[in-house]
Length: 356
Image 1 (tube, rainbow, N blue to C red):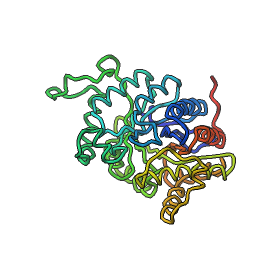
Image 2: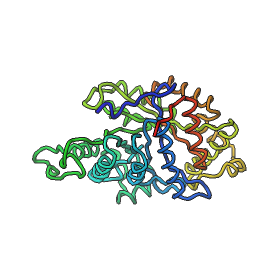
Image 3: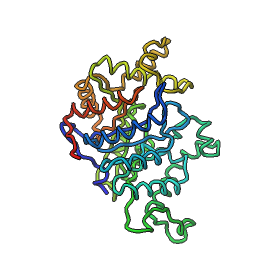
Image 4: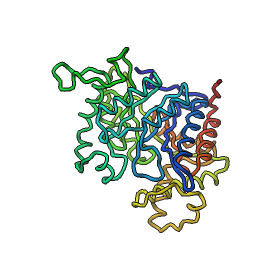
């Protein structure tokens, strides 16, 4: 299964480059437009040699249209042929493991050999929404049970519950019971040490959310590598990091776009979630000193500017973290700016244009 995990660096990129898609909805735009942009982005990423395109699970956030990753991934699978598609990730405590196994078994049947199942243990939303999703207010219980949920999900995907187990006669379909074995590789996602250690102990690939937990990146990756035990999946650690990155033809244009994303994050963190504001709205916003401190700190961990500046920033980040893959997310108001950013980054690394 290793070859379904490790990517290939292309052009002059030091490691494989991939896409993390939040399906952002900007002010004055619609969810339909955001989802259409995701299709364009997946096609662009495939054409320019990005290794994978992941979609993140979020709930009750007006500026994000990715509440149902499996549905979006099925749509993207119908519009692409080669690029790996996956969840970045499915928040497992929100779902019954059997349901996730069925959804991703279906995706594997639709796009054989190019589906990833990235799993997280956070709710991907606020506590009240998580309670509505899970029909319980015992939210910590879901996170604490993550290893057991993961083990159950893996059993369903492999169709190998032992004799005598209550689920031994239950089959996740589509799945191995219907034919040759083959299922999406599991990735663990995290923004702290818990999933890093668990991924290492289980010998699974690990994805770290550098884009919103930058201070924990190096410690978490070190913990993952130190904890790693070879498995049937991997013989050595493999870690990617999510990076907020945006390139534009001019540095000033990039600054305007990322300021929109920073204001959207400020509003989310202060309990005022909404559509991603326009660059004009972000420039006109009157930041308080505390808000300015937050946005400055947020932007310090965004790689943005001209294509050359972004390439330099990504190269430096890769050297500092030792990441095996960089997964880029562009949180901007408009789809045009996001698509242009990925095209410019591909050009900066001389990623080849795919034929056909």
